[in-house]
Length: 391
Ligand code: CMC
Image 1 (cartoon, rainbow, N blue to C red):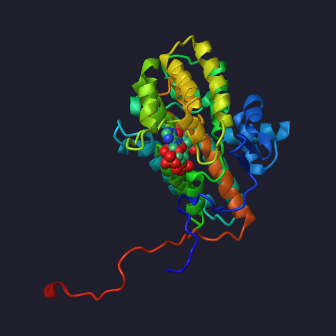
Image 2: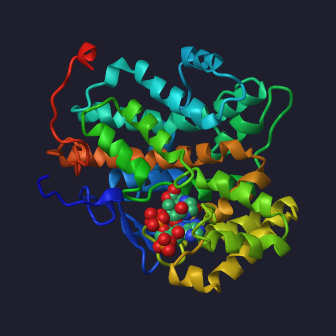
Image 3: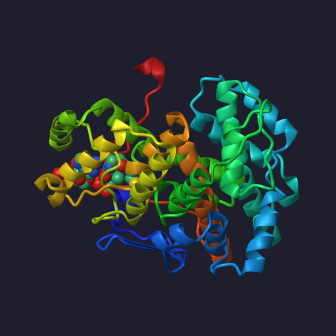
């Protein structure tokens, strides 16, 4: 073996230079283009944050208006793509459908397939950002058997998403502004997180010059796992399994037991060794949504008590394990009426802009290399091959 640096899981290897997102995991700081995540979540809308991530600066009011209009012009998906859904079983996991239909976009836009052409990249970015809510809502509608709802361009990005999810052709649907704002905040909180597994997957796929829609499908696949985006689904399942606060100590004990594979979902992070700043905003938003809806769920009580006990437990203190973005998000999504199987789709929808921002950055920087890690070979030494009949 030649001596390569051995760093499984990229624990200490920077894979690229990036000017999009900064994380100080020890201090619990997350900045997008220099702006703290909590200030963005409180004061900006998702498309403003999307613009910031994609172009490096906040939009002026005029740029914001034009960008929003441009996104709205691209919210429809090709009618033929709507028939692609029919190939899936209705009980498919929505993330399986998302992997398929987002990758299928690659088959539709032959006018912009030259990734070396900046204007092709720009229109691809807009299309992805605009169509992802439409595809996500279609996944849900398909699973319920209800008709797909066309996007409504007079609504906001998040309002339109709620409309496409919950409206039916039978009666008027009015978007609740508190839920619309909560949805927008959830999207902002998930928009980007530097070189996480799915973003690194998108960059890796793109490093070969692959079609960007296919690269995003690869990112969606990577996001699906319970250690990454699938944690929001796993977390709500865990909170439901715990059920009542008196059962928390049993689950805390299991999380600490090295012979038990169980982990507290929505807890711990590769980079944050402090409270995830997104989790703070998420917890506040959770209270706002439940109070607006008049929902009194035992899940919130279990989550808050679980957090309290874990944060005072020597194991969690020593291992620097804090709630992450997925800990409270599921309670909000469930209260809004989004089914658990759609939780990771919400993450994918929101993270699409981060994936595209990194993809664009790679190309704009230029000179990137195809991602081709080395390995430490542990297999057989060279040996002669005997023909089968001689064995
Ligand atoms: N519950 C109990 N113990 C944990 C947990 C947890 N949630 N997370 C980490 N640990 C322990 C782990 O057992 C290990 O202990 P020891 O050193 O004694 O063997 C130590 O902490 C380090 O864990 P690790 O797996 O080496 O850390 P990692 O950086 O590779 O993994 C993680 C990070 C997020 C995958 C992990 O904390 C985890 O599995 N958390 C639960 C899943 C989750 O909530 N994921 C969402 C992450 S945030 C959203 C996103 O990025 O997608």
